[in-house]
Image 1 (cartoon, one colour):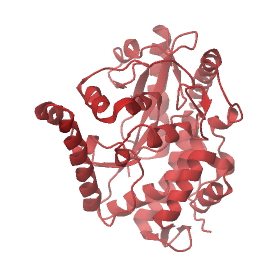
Image 2 (cartoon, helix red, strand yellow):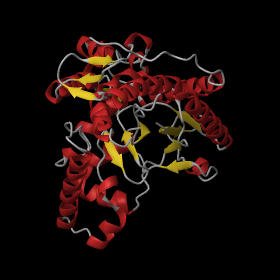
Image 3 (cartoon, one colour):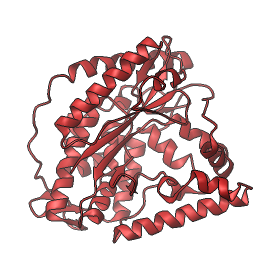
Image 4 (cartoon, helix red, strand yellow):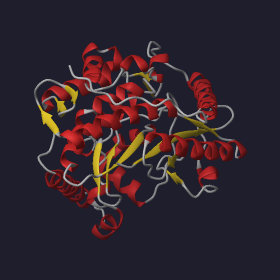
Length: 369
Protein backbone atom coordinates (compact mmCIF):
# COMPACT_ATOMS: atom_id res chain seq x y z
CA UNK A 1 0.00 0.00 0.00
CA UNK A 2 1.97 3.00 -1.25
CA UNK A 3 1.83 6.31 0.61
CA UNK A 4 2.50 9.89 -0.43
CA UNK A 5 2.19 13.28 1.22
CA UNK A 6 1.28 16.81 0.24
CA UNK A 7 2.54 19.32 2.82
CA UNK A 8 1.46 22.97 2.77
CA UNK A 9 3.80 25.55 4.32
CA UNK A 10 3.61 29.28 4.87
CA UNK A 11 6.43 31.35 3.41
CA UNK A 12 7.70 34.31 5.41
CA UNK A 13 10.53 36.82 5.09
CA UNK A 14 13.33 37.30 7.60
CA UNK A 15 11.06 39.37 9.85
CA UNK A 16 8.44 36.63 10.02
CA UNK A 17 5.95 38.54 7.83
CA UNK A 18 4.08 36.49 5.25
CA UNK A 19 5.75 36.78 1.84
CA UNK A 20 4.90 35.39 -1.62
CA UNK A 21 6.04 31.83 -2.27
CA UNK A 22 6.41 32.40 -6.01
CA UNK A 23 10.22 32.95 -6.01
CA UNK A 24 10.68 29.53 -4.40
CA UNK A 25 8.04 27.68 -6.43
CA UNK A 26 9.51 28.94 -9.71
CA UNK A 27 12.85 27.32 -8.94
CA UNK A 28 11.68 23.83 -7.96
CA UNK A 29 9.63 21.76 -10.40
CA UNK A 30 8.14 19.50 -7.72
CA UNK A 31 6.73 22.34 -5.63
CA UNK A 32 3.15 23.42 -6.18
CA UNK A 33 1.73 26.91 -5.79
CA UNK A 34 -1.39 27.34 -3.67
CA UNK A 35 -4.26 29.82 -3.98
CA UNK A 36 -2.79 31.80 -1.06
CA UNK A 37 0.25 33.73 -2.27
CA UNK A 38 2.40 33.06 0.85
CA UNK A 39 1.98 29.28 0.71
CA UNK A 40 3.58 26.42 -1.18
CA UNK A 41 3.02 22.68 -1.24
CA UNK A 42 5.76 20.05 -0.98
CA UNK A 43 4.66 16.87 -2.78
CA UNK A 44 6.36 13.50 -2.39
CA UNK A 45 6.48 10.58 -4.77
CA UNK A 46 4.54 7.45 -3.73
CA UNK A 47 6.58 5.38 -1.26
CA UNK A 48 6.34 1.72 -0.28
CA UNK A 49 6.53 2.32 3.47
CA UNK A 50 7.00 5.00 6.10
CA UNK A 51 10.78 4.60 6.17
CA UNK A 52 10.98 5.41 2.47
CA UNK A 53 8.51 8.25 2.92
CA UNK A 54 10.69 9.70 5.69
CA UNK A 55 13.63 9.89 3.32
CA UNK A 56 11.50 11.42 0.58
CA UNK A 57 10.09 14.08 2.91
CA UNK A 58 13.57 14.92 4.21
CA UNK A 59 15.06 15.26 0.73
CA UNK A 60 12.30 17.45 -0.61
CA UNK A 61 12.12 19.65 2.48
CA UNK A 62 15.87 20.17 2.48
CA UNK A 63 15.75 21.42 -1.10
CA UNK A 64 12.74 23.64 -0.46
CA UNK A 65 14.31 25.15 2.67
CA UNK A 66 17.64 25.74 0.91
CA UNK A 67 16.04 27.50 -2.05
CA UNK A 68 13.73 29.45 0.23
CA UNK A 69 16.72 30.72 2.21
CA UNK A 70 18.40 31.84 -1.02
CA UNK A 71 15.24 33.77 -1.90
CA UNK A 72 14.94 35.42 1.51
CA UNK A 73 12.16 33.09 2.62
CA UNK A 74 11.55 30.67 5.49
CA UNK A 75 9.04 27.78 5.63
CA UNK A 76 6.64 27.70 8.58
CA UNK A 77 4.89 24.46 9.69
CA UNK A 78 1.84 26.04 11.31
CA UNK A 79 -1.78 25.39 10.37
CA UNK A 80 -2.70 29.09 10.36
CA UNK A 81 -0.62 32.25 10.17
CA UNK A 82 -1.85 33.00 13.72
CA UNK A 83 -2.51 36.67 13.01
CA UNK A 84 -2.07 38.74 9.89
CA UNK A 85 -3.85 41.20 7.63
CA UNK A 86 -5.33 40.35 4.21
CA UNK A 87 -3.71 37.47 2.34
CA UNK A 88 -3.19 37.75 -1.42
CA UNK A 89 -4.49 35.03 -3.71
CA UNK A 90 -3.75 33.89 -7.25
CA UNK A 91 -7.09 35.26 -8.50
CA UNK A 92 -7.29 32.51 -11.13
CA UNK A 93 -10.59 31.33 -12.60
CA UNK A 94 -11.14 28.68 -9.92
CA UNK A 95 -10.60 31.20 -7.14
CA UNK A 96 -12.90 33.72 -8.80
CA UNK A 97 -15.72 31.16 -9.01
CA UNK A 98 -15.24 30.04 -5.42
CA UNK A 99 -15.40 33.64 -4.21
CA UNK A 100 -18.52 34.25 -6.22
CA UNK A 101 -20.33 31.16 -4.92
CA UNK A 102 -19.07 31.06 -1.33
CA UNK A 103 -18.80 34.77 -0.66
CA UNK A 104 -16.61 36.34 1.99
CA UNK A 105 -16.35 33.05 3.92
CA UNK A 106 -14.05 31.63 1.26
CA UNK A 107 -11.28 34.04 2.30
CA UNK A 108 -10.86 31.91 5.44
CA UNK A 109 -9.63 29.01 3.30
CA UNK A 110 -6.53 31.03 2.43
CA UNK A 111 -5.59 30.99 6.13
CA UNK A 112 -5.39 27.20 6.46
CA UNK A 113 -2.35 24.98 5.82
CA UNK A 114 -2.83 21.23 5.97
CA UNK A 115 -1.39 17.82 5.23
CA UNK A 116 -2.88 15.48 2.65
CA UNK A 117 -2.05 11.78 2.79
CA UNK A 118 -2.67 9.61 -0.27
CA UNK A 119 -2.95 5.83 0.16
CA UNK A 120 -3.29 3.29 -2.62
CA UNK A 121 -6.76 1.97 -3.26
CA UNK A 122 -6.76 -1.78 -2.60
CA UNK A 123 -9.14 -3.79 -4.78
CA UNK A 124 -11.98 -5.14 -2.70
CA UNK A 125 -11.07 -3.03 0.33
CA UNK A 126 -11.77 0.51 -0.92
CA UNK A 127 -15.00 0.90 1.01
CA UNK A 128 -13.35 -0.22 4.25
CA UNK A 129 -10.44 2.14 3.55
CA UNK A 130 -12.79 5.11 3.10
CA UNK A 131 -14.72 4.23 6.25
CA UNK A 132 -11.58 3.69 8.33
CA UNK A 133 -10.12 7.07 7.33
CA UNK A 134 -13.49 8.60 8.14
CA UNK A 135 -13.47 6.94 11.57
CA UNK A 136 -9.90 8.11 12.27
CA UNK A 137 -10.65 11.72 11.43
CA UNK A 138 -10.30 12.85 15.10
CA UNK A 139 -6.61 11.89 14.88
CA UNK A 140 -5.99 15.38 13.52
CA UNK A 141 -5.94 16.36 17.21
CA UNK A 142 -2.60 14.54 17.55
CA UNK A 143 -0.82 16.98 15.22
CA UNK A 144 -2.82 20.18 15.67
CA UNK A 145 -0.41 23.05 15.07
CA UNK A 146 -2.42 26.20 15.73
CA UNK A 147 -5.10 27.36 18.13
CA UNK A 148 -5.30 30.89 16.68
CA UNK A 149 -7.12 32.52 13.78
CA UNK A 150 -6.82 36.23 13.03
CA UNK A 151 -5.10 36.63 16.40
CA UNK A 152 -7.83 35.02 18.48
CA UNK A 153 -7.65 31.67 20.27
CA UNK A 154 -10.61 29.95 18.59
CA UNK A 155 -10.16 26.20 19.19
CA UNK A 156 -7.61 23.54 20.03
CA UNK A 157 -7.46 22.89 16.30
CA UNK A 158 -7.99 26.27 14.67
CA UNK A 159 -7.61 25.02 11.11
CA UNK A 160 -10.34 22.40 11.42
CA UNK A 161 -12.55 24.96 13.16
CA UNK A 162 -12.05 27.54 10.42
CA UNK A 163 -11.97 25.20 7.42
CA UNK A 164 -14.99 23.11 8.32
CA UNK A 165 -17.15 25.68 10.08
CA UNK A 166 -16.21 28.95 8.42
CA UNK A 167 -15.32 28.54 4.73
CA UNK A 168 -18.33 27.22 2.85
CA UNK A 169 -21.29 29.39 3.85
CA UNK A 170 -24.50 27.88 2.53
CA UNK A 171 -22.65 24.81 1.22
CA UNK A 172 -21.24 23.06 4.32
CA UNK A 173 -21.34 19.71 2.50
CA UNK A 174 -18.32 20.88 0.47
CA UNK A 175 -16.04 20.75 3.51
CA UNK A 176 -17.52 18.66 6.31
CA UNK A 177 -16.88 15.04 7.23
CA UNK A 178 -19.39 12.76 5.54
CA UNK A 179 -21.02 9.67 7.06
CA UNK A 180 -19.74 6.18 6.31
CA UNK A 181 -20.54 4.70 2.90
CA UNK A 182 -21.86 1.33 1.83
CA UNK A 183 -19.69 1.37 -1.27
CA UNK A 184 -17.23 3.53 -3.17
CA UNK A 185 -20.02 4.07 -5.69
CA UNK A 186 -22.08 5.69 -2.92
CA UNK A 187 -19.16 7.99 -2.10
CA UNK A 188 -18.93 8.97 -5.76
CA UNK A 189 -22.68 9.58 -5.95
CA UNK A 190 -22.44 11.95 -2.98
CA UNK A 191 -19.54 13.74 -4.60
CA UNK A 192 -21.43 14.07 -7.87
CA UNK A 193 -24.53 15.43 -6.10
CA UNK A 194 -22.42 17.96 -4.20
CA UNK A 195 -20.71 19.01 -7.42
CA UNK A 196 -24.01 19.50 -9.22
CA UNK A 197 -25.30 21.68 -6.39
CA UNK A 198 -22.10 23.74 -6.49
CA UNK A 199 -22.36 24.08 -10.28
CA UNK A 200 -26.03 25.07 -10.17
CA UNK A 201 -25.30 27.79 -7.62
CA UNK A 202 -22.37 29.06 -9.68
CA UNK A 203 -24.50 29.33 -12.81
CA UNK A 204 -27.26 31.07 -10.85
CA UNK A 205 -24.61 33.62 -9.80
CA UNK A 206 -23.81 34.33 -13.43
CA UNK A 207 -20.76 32.10 -13.92
CA UNK A 208 -20.39 31.01 -17.55
CA UNK A 209 -21.08 27.25 -17.86
CA UNK A 210 -18.12 26.64 -20.17
CA UNK A 211 -15.80 28.54 -17.85
CA UNK A 212 -17.04 26.53 -14.88
CA UNK A 213 -16.67 23.18 -16.65
CA UNK A 214 -13.16 24.08 -17.81
CA UNK A 215 -12.00 24.57 -14.23
CA UNK A 216 -14.03 22.19 -12.04
CA UNK A 217 -14.80 18.48 -11.96
CA UNK A 218 -16.56 16.42 -9.28
CA UNK A 219 -13.30 15.00 -7.94
CA UNK A 220 -11.71 18.39 -7.23
CA UNK A 221 -14.82 20.36 -6.29
CA UNK A 222 -15.31 19.10 -2.77
CA UNK A 223 -12.88 19.81 0.03
CA UNK A 224 -14.05 17.16 2.49
CA UNK A 225 -11.60 15.36 4.81
CA UNK A 226 -11.83 12.17 2.70
CA UNK A 227 -11.70 12.12 -1.09
CA UNK A 228 -11.50 9.22 -3.54
CA UNK A 229 -9.09 10.30 -6.26
CA UNK A 230 -9.61 8.54 -9.59
CA UNK A 231 -6.80 10.61 -11.09
CA UNK A 232 -4.20 9.07 -8.76
CA UNK A 233 -6.02 5.81 -7.89
CA UNK A 234 -5.74 6.79 -4.23
CA UNK A 235 -7.85 7.69 -1.24
CA UNK A 236 -6.88 11.08 0.12
CA UNK A 237 -7.03 11.92 3.84
CA UNK A 238 -7.07 15.70 4.23
CA UNK A 239 -7.78 16.06 7.95
CA UNK A 240 -4.41 16.81 9.59
CA UNK A 241 -2.76 20.19 9.96
CA UNK A 242 0.68 20.75 8.57
CA UNK A 243 3.11 20.26 11.45
CA UNK A 244 6.69 19.22 12.09
CA UNK A 245 7.56 16.31 9.78
CA UNK A 246 8.46 13.94 12.60
CA UNK A 247 4.99 14.36 14.09
CA UNK A 248 3.31 13.75 10.74
CA UNK A 249 5.40 10.68 9.96
CA UNK A 250 4.55 9.18 13.35
CA UNK A 251 0.89 9.78 12.56
CA UNK A 252 1.26 8.11 9.16
CA UNK A 253 2.97 5.11 10.75
CA UNK A 254 0.14 4.68 13.24
CA UNK A 255 -2.41 5.12 10.50
CA UNK A 256 -0.63 2.57 8.31
CA UNK A 257 -1.04 -0.06 11.03
CA UNK A 258 -4.78 0.55 11.13
CA UNK A 259 -5.06 0.51 7.34
CA UNK A 260 -3.20 -2.79 7.07
CA UNK A 261 -5.38 -4.35 9.76
CA UNK A 262 -8.47 -3.16 7.89
CA UNK A 263 -7.30 -4.52 4.55
CA UNK A 264 -6.36 -7.86 6.13
CA UNK A 265 -9.32 -8.35 8.47
CA UNK A 266 -12.05 -5.98 7.37
CA UNK A 267 -13.94 -3.25 9.19
CA UNK A 268 -16.99 -3.40 11.42
CA UNK A 269 -19.13 -0.42 12.43
CA UNK A 270 -20.41 -0.59 16.00
CA UNK A 271 -19.29 -2.86 18.80
CA UNK A 272 -16.16 -2.90 20.94
CA UNK A 273 -13.76 -0.37 19.45
CA UNK A 274 -10.22 -1.26 18.49
CA UNK A 275 -7.78 -3.12 16.29
CA UNK A 276 -7.32 -6.88 16.54
CA UNK A 277 -6.25 -9.82 14.43
CA UNK A 278 -9.84 -10.01 13.20
CA UNK A 279 -9.87 -6.46 11.82
CA UNK A 280 -10.94 -3.03 13.01
CA UNK A 281 -14.11 -1.93 14.79
CA UNK A 282 -15.16 1.72 14.61
CA UNK A 283 -18.01 3.65 16.25
CA UNK A 284 -21.36 4.51 14.75
CA UNK A 285 -21.14 7.79 12.84
CA UNK A 286 -23.21 9.83 15.30
CA UNK A 287 -20.76 8.93 18.05
CA UNK A 288 -17.81 9.59 15.78
CA UNK A 289 -19.17 13.04 15.01
CA UNK A 290 -19.10 13.83 18.73
CA UNK A 291 -15.42 12.85 18.87
CA UNK A 292 -14.71 15.07 15.85
CA UNK A 293 -16.36 18.12 17.42
CA UNK A 294 -14.51 17.53 20.70
CA UNK A 295 -11.23 17.13 18.81
CA UNK A 296 -11.75 20.50 17.14
CA UNK A 297 -12.71 22.34 20.32
CA UNK A 298 -10.58 20.63 22.97
CA UNK A 299 -8.03 18.43 21.19
CA UNK A 300 -6.16 15.98 23.39
CA UNK A 301 -7.43 17.77 26.48
CA UNK A 302 -10.72 15.97 25.85
CA UNK A 303 -10.66 12.65 27.77
CA UNK A 304 -13.16 11.25 25.27
CA UNK A 305 -10.92 12.06 22.31
CA UNK A 306 -7.80 10.76 24.04
CA UNK A 307 -9.56 7.53 25.03
CA UNK A 308 -10.97 7.04 21.55
CA UNK A 309 -7.63 7.50 19.81
CA UNK A 310 -5.97 5.15 22.31
CA UNK A 311 -8.59 2.50 21.53
CA UNK A 312 -7.94 2.96 17.81
CA UNK A 313 -4.24 2.19 18.03
CA UNK A 314 -2.66 5.58 18.68
CA UNK A 315 -0.59 6.53 21.71
CA UNK A 316 -1.72 10.09 22.49
CA UNK A 317 0.94 10.45 25.19
CA UNK A 318 3.66 10.15 22.51
CA UNK A 319 2.37 13.22 20.67
CA UNK A 320 2.87 16.85 21.62
CA UNK A 321 0.72 19.02 19.29
CA UNK A 322 2.29 22.39 18.54
CA UNK A 323 -1.03 24.09 19.26
CA UNK A 324 -0.61 23.20 22.94
CA UNK A 325 2.38 25.54 23.16
CA UNK A 326 0.10 28.57 22.81
CA UNK A 327 -3.30 27.19 23.67
CA UNK A 328 -3.48 29.21 26.90
CA UNK A 329 -2.77 32.50 25.11
CA UNK A 330 -6.04 34.26 24.37
CA UNK A 331 -4.75 36.72 21.78
CA UNK A 332 -1.63 37.23 19.68
CA UNK A 333 -0.55 40.52 18.14
CA UNK A 334 0.83 40.70 14.61
CA UNK A 335 4.38 41.15 15.92
CA UNK A 336 4.01 38.19 18.29
CA UNK A 337 2.75 36.07 15.39
CA UNK A 338 5.80 37.01 13.31
CA UNK A 339 8.20 36.00 16.07
CA UNK A 340 6.40 32.70 16.58
CA UNK A 341 6.51 31.90 12.86
CA UNK A 342 10.28 32.36 12.85
CA UNK A 343 10.58 30.15 15.94
CA UNK A 344 8.80 27.31 14.17
CA UNK A 345 10.72 27.90 10.96
CA UNK A 346 13.83 27.28 13.07
CA UNK A 347 12.31 24.11 14.49
CA UNK A 348 11.43 22.83 11.03
CA UNK A 349 14.95 23.41 9.74
CA UNK A 350 16.45 21.76 12.80
CA UNK A 351 14.21 18.74 12.56
CA UNK A 352 14.91 18.16 8.87
CA UNK A 353 18.55 17.80 9.86
CA UNK A 354 17.61 15.32 12.60
CA UNK A 355 15.50 13.29 10.17
CA UNK A 356 18.65 12.05 8.47
CA UNK A 357 18.76 9.46 11.27
CA UNK A 358 16.25 6.67 10.56
CA UNK A 359 13.45 6.40 13.08
CA UNK A 360 13.32 3.18 15.10
CA UNK A 361 10.88 0.65 13.71
CA UNK A 362 7.59 0.33 15.58
CA UNK A 363 5.75 -2.94 16.01
CA UNK A 364 2.24 -3.26 14.61
CA UNK A 365 -0.45 -2.26 17.09
CA UNK A 366 -2.95 -4.93 18.13
CA UNK A 367 -4.80 -3.01 20.76
CA UNK A 368 -8.49 -3.10 21.51
CA UNK A 369 -10.60 -1.42 24.13
